[in-house]
Image 1 (tube, rainbow, N blue to C red):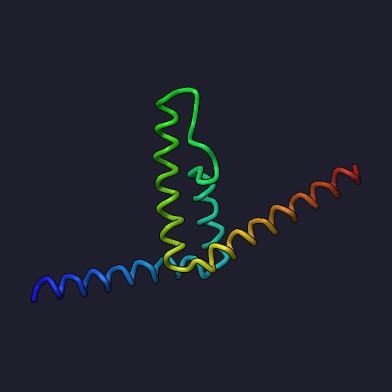
Image 2: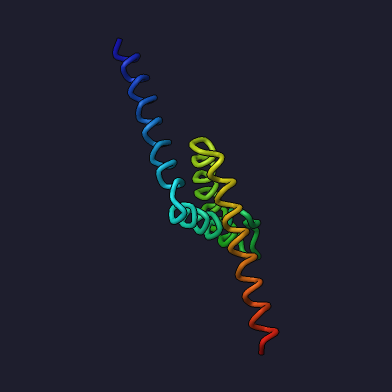
Amino acid sequence: MTETKTKKQEKQDRREQLNDVCAIMDSPAGRRFVSRILAQSRVYKTSFAAQNDQTNFNEGMRNVGLWIFAECEEACADKILLMMQEHQDKTKEREHARQRSDTSS
């Protein structure tokens, strides 16, 4: 009987955790923040460095980023795609602005 309550509580706790992630990913500011965390944690880069200590550090950062990515994917995969599209749009916008300023100089 106690084990069943524990499993129910675990499911409820997990549902709450995923709802928290969705709440963050529902806002443009939250998606920008998560995008920055993923970039900073080197999710999209190799962990390898010339020194083993640096490689280990990078891999630890990447592991946290991958956990955040997995949480987002489980909670609201559609928001990950939106986050990536928004990031790509912003990057293109900045590049166009840079090109315009280079040609006007």
